[in-house]
Length: 453
Image (cartoon, rainbow, N blue to C red):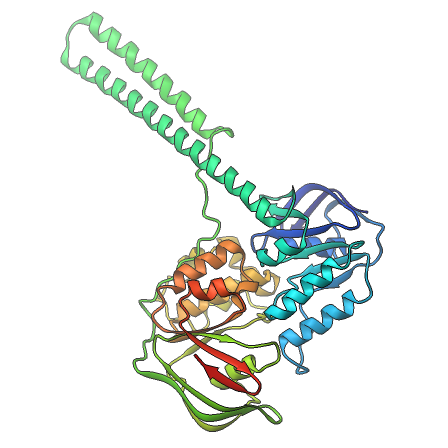
């Protein structure tokens, strides 16, 4: 059994969760979900005893967990190949406690399905899985822990059921808030009308009785106004729902490249030897491309060559890319700089807009002095997206963004990129995301070449 008793954890003086108590047993497969930065990875580290709670206890009699997180860097294969090898190493020994932090990140569709089957074949293990891929979780888990509002809510069933419950609660809260606002406005207008009528009576009459009555009415109206004010300040008064994903995109400052951006004729790409051959590509400004292919087929190498990466050999005719290229990597490397200093490098915003821009991407004033290395993967993804949009790049390359952003952040990103006027290249295994982004051109990397459709 795994038991969390009255656990509180703070990071950089920020409370992630407080007085949390949960239990889990063998044969349960638990999804651990929540917005970026709420403490999902931190909870896994608490369970793995890599971190200690600030108060409370974590009790585990299942033994040392098989704890999967980002695979090690290296040149021995693609990110997807290294991720799958690492997962195999952990799962083939049938561990009693399995902690998986974004296990589908980097995996192609076939390996994601293989992982699902493998997890379902381990019925005696306790599995706790962090992932933003809700479709994957819905096929695997039978219970959901949701981190939000400094607490962890325990739901029976997969995230789809938990999401439905949360949405029902959100709708009910919104309706209650709107009803409260209508009633508050009615009372406010009634009080104001009463006060105005009493004031006009005092101003227009010399009758002492009428004036005393008007003053009495005005006094009662002020008393009602104070009661309404106290009510609005009380803890029971419903606050306006907040947008948890305030991502904003604007492209007024963007560099625009008309005509052909990239042309490759009978191209060849490799590292120590040829990897991709006979490549024919023609990319125009404003094109939207989906880049697909199995793990290890050469997608990342193609992007490296397009971006002029070091160590990539190229043959044939390569022209471009023209303009500036912004690339959102699969893994954001740690950086010791604070958020504001990191963001300011290379941006094209008018002076004084940096703080407001970051605030629009969900970074409050307290985040600005925080080290980038202390941010979660999703927060670093948002920070890098903010910097790319502020830089106004003419070509934007996103390498599997769906595995870093939470659902709301991903939805907001799709809304913003729907209006992006530049050239967009996206590596993604998720069909719905590609359709939402309007990726009408497909480059498929397989068997040593690139086919265009």
